[in-house]
Length: 103
Image (tube, rainbow, N blue to C red; front, side, top):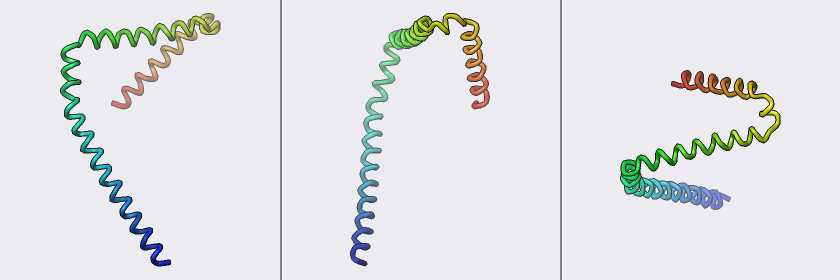
């Protein structure tokens, strides 16, 4: 029985050591990749700021357009624009208060 416990303890220790070694390899690989990718990422943003601005603008517009289209298809939202406005203002007030509270 003691031999089984010793073997179990040895397996646990070796598994823990292997996990630690694996974590250190993953961390080192992550640092290496990030150090090589970061300059490319920064230079792309510096070289093409207009492209990124257009992509962000298109994404935001697509989201707004989609929400508007979905709300137009629903009879309830179309019939109660003041409720929609009140809900929108309420969400903005709540998120503004949360933003102020967090920092």
